[in-house]
Length: 375
Image 1 (tube, rainbow, N blue to C red):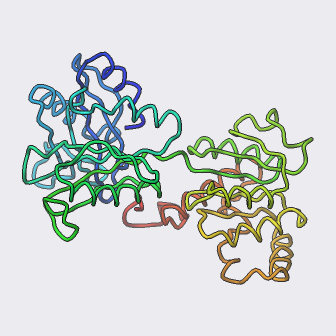
Image 2: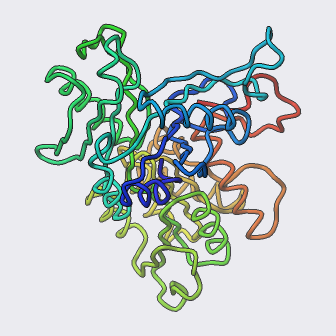
Image 3: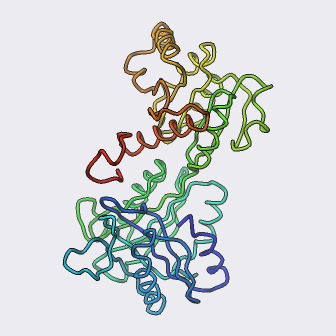
């Protein structure tokens, strides 16, 4: 919903209803991930996409029907081998799309949710997309972390609300969007009720250590991938906002001290990517000692030649870093793309981060078989 939020919010504020089709589940090579959305307005205009073009026409027609009836619909789209004219995905994937009417009555918290997203505050929206009782479909809760959590709305019963609140806050903490299944009253070992939890967590962080030309390129591609990018270096003459316009922030600090402080403050998690580009032992060895011992981090990559890598390993072992901790490090950083320039190196680093995140092997697709999209 994030990609169509501005359009949807403008219509909601003007009192105009809209139909929203949201991808709530995918299988195989689906072109869009859960949370991708498409808005069908009362004037016939469209914003967003749920499949990159394969089933948009069908969702558009369904959206017009939902606008007229007010009844939500959960529709599955896939490949049909029996009907050549059936609407489906040419990629061979399968998606479930939940189409609902959105207005002040159906989604009274939309303005508040939009404000949270704009401010970078974590918020999750849980919506019933399937239930034996049709009156429960479309029921919604808004979840915000805290002690205690802030919960508004209900999906039909205190038992169901408690189960979805617990699971939804867990998904939000991990930045994950998923469809959960319960019994009709929220029983964990049951089926019949499906709840789509869409998490709007702050962007994941990429911290680039070392204010060099390669860092500028990595910062640009990190920003392009949706990371909140920080460049950190102990040398103020190099660590300037002018040299790193793509970074969200530039910090002048010894790298290991900065990382330790950020981790202690809870600002490093399993989605965080750490790119160590200093390739100077006085900077990167103390930094990697901190990084490799963090309880949760998404990626730790360290730049350097083969010789620098071997020297770095020896220094880390001398410092007491274990082999298990060293195994968490990607060094030399990046995939073997054969690149030479800072920009090509940045693509190599980004490719490795993506491959590790989704379980890809980094092979050429022409040499592989099976699904192209990993889950």
